[in-house]
Length: 128
Image (cartoon, one colour):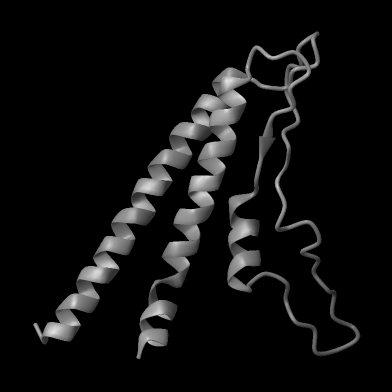
């Protein structure tokens, strides 16, 4: 029975964990905006979530099908700056702040959806 609950909530749990990791990464970028030579890092949230939940690459059932690649999908990468600075720092403060705000909003949304899912399970258990 507990496996059913865990499976029911695992996507939201994984999403919250990854959002927290991404928020920490973006906060580090913002904190190092004035550090010479610092390279801004970010992650592809959807690719990371797919890798963590076991989704992603399509299965091929025929040798004429094209295989999709998820190589490097579960890794954080370096952000390519639009306007690189002369000291080698790749942090663009406006971009990082916007990404951080969006990530925070999506974290709150994931938390709200998880709370609603738990409330729904509670109602089902109580028979309401």
